[in-house]
Image (cartoon, rainbow, N blue to C red; front, side, top):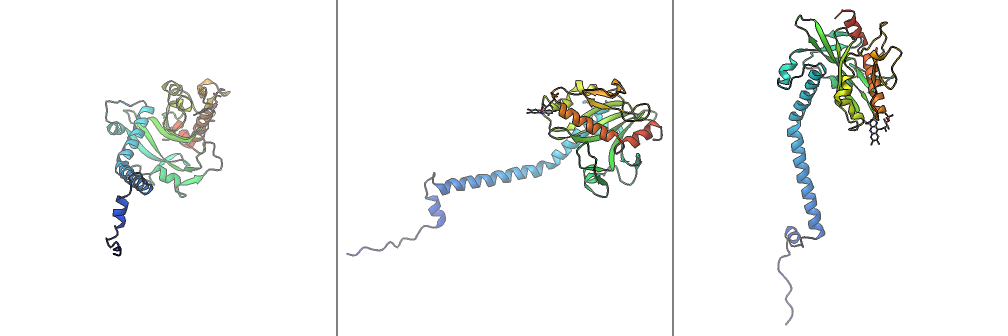
Length: 271
Ligand SMILES: Cc1cc2nc3c(=O)[nH]c(=O)nc-3n(C[C@H](O)[C@H](O)[C@H](O)COP(=O)(O)O)c2cc1C
């Protein structure tokens, strides 16, 4: 008797795949690819849904730093409520005066620094920032009589590994430093990140920016300038490179391309 041909239907692709042993190469690859896809979808969904929360936290962190550098932070008081004590202005760096060309409530500093109409490419760039906005949001704290008490000025520049973003608070005379604080950087903990050490930050309080002749005197580092210790902050030991970055960025922002025209207007009582 002749042998009957096998006429049973050939299993489909999926059935053949499922019938493979669990440790076969196709099954292992399929599980790995599926896991990657699911994990990337979860991560993407989390990134999208958490973005508003992250932005709100970043804004809150910035406001806390403005309050802290001006010495008016109270953890018991709501940050937004406490921040109402400040006036936000958009400063024209060239004239050193507040401008009403932009609404301070909606002015986007990061976008202004990218926009060729509101920023310049720096040829002399000691702070290592590439472009500089010519308009900057600044924060003014007034006393009960309505006179300027302090101004909080954003500063940023390159340290050793990262761009440091922070604020410097200057007294109403446009010369005495009240405080300096960085809210974002990636310097090494224990070395460059000691810029956050409260004991080092305390050194800034009461130091002066400009000498009697109006020239910029403030320095940060090993050696004090000829003008004297009132104009000098000791560098961080073991972090000379970050210290040099802070010296460069502070001198850049307090100089003619930065806030010097505004601080001169404050000093002469024209604000
Ligand atoms: C892993 C590592 C991380 C460092 N991070 C920093 C830093 O964040 N800032 C800094 O100024 N120096 C940092 N340094 C040290 C610098 O390379 C350099 O030695 C130091 O700035 C010299 O400071 P000094 O003259 O005060 O000793 C780091 C060194 C190493 C090995």
